[in-house]
Length: 360
Image (cartoon, rainbow, N blue to C red; front, side, top):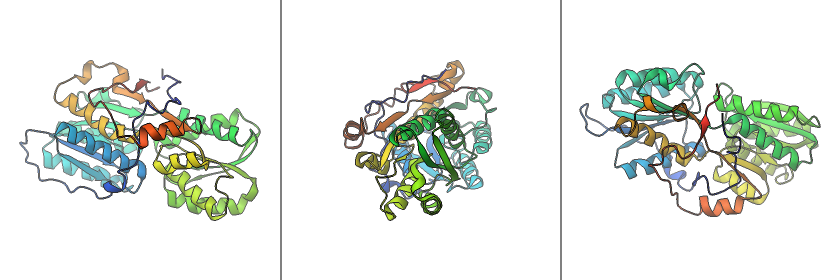
C-alpha cells in the first residue's frame, strides 16, 4: 500500500522541480540520424508540450541525466495529439533500430499500450509515467517495459482541497478546474476533490469546468465563472498549477488576487511564487526535473543489465513516487533549497523516491 505520509512538508525531499531552465527548453530537438548498428542507445523523452512549464522542466531533467550519462538525447512533443505522439515514437524506433530508451508521459491513457507494444517489438526499453490503462502492466512485456511511475492523484487532490477549505474558514463556495478528463492524473485528482467535499458539507462546489491542463483555457473559464458567481466564489481548486496560474490572471484582472485563494499541483515556479505572495494557498510537486531524468535512468540501467526488471519487486515495476506539499509553512525553505539551489540528484539512486506499489 502507498505510504500516506508521502505528501510531506519537507522542502528538502524533492530536488528542484523548477523551473529556472524552462524557457531554455522551448525548442524541440531535431531527430538525429542514428545508425541502425549504433553502440550506445539514444535516450528519448516523449511529453505533451514545452509550452507547459511542468513539461519544460521535465525536459531539463532529461537533458541533465543524458549529459551525466554521456548519451545522446532527443525530445519529442505531441502537442496534445495522440496520433502524432505515437507516430513520432515509432519513427524514432525505426531510426535507432530499437537501440533506445524511452521515458514517456503518454498524451492520453489509451496511448500507453501502442507505445509499449511498439517498443517491445523493436527491442527498446520504456518507462511510462502518469497515464496507462489499468490492464496494462510492465510484467506483461518483460523485460522491455521496465516501470510505470505515478504520483497519488487522489491524495494530492484531497490534500490541496482540504488546505483550500481551511484557508476559507471551512465554509462557502468554490469552483474547480479539471485537467484532460481522460488522463489518470485528472481522474484521480477529481476523486480526491470529491472525497474532501464529502467530508466537508459546509463547502459548496459551485461549478467544475475542464480546462485541459491549459492556463489560457483556465483564464477564459475563470472569467466566465466570476461573471456567473461573483462574490460567492471564496476559493479555486485547480488540478494543475498551469490552470491555477490562468485563474490567477483572471483574478488579477478583477483586483481579486490574494483575496480568493487558489490551490494546484505541479510546483511550477509561478505557483511557488504565488504561494510566497499569498495568492496560492499551496501546491504539490512531483518534481518534474527528477521525473525527466530518473525515468531515463531506470530504463537505461535496465537496458545495460545493471538490474533485471523481471527480478524486481512489484513496487519497482509500478510505483508511486514521493510528492512534496509546498505551503505557507515551508515555502521559503523550499525556495532556498529547491529553486535558488542547483539540482543535486543521485542518478544512481533509482528507487530512493518510491513510496509504494500502485494500488490496483
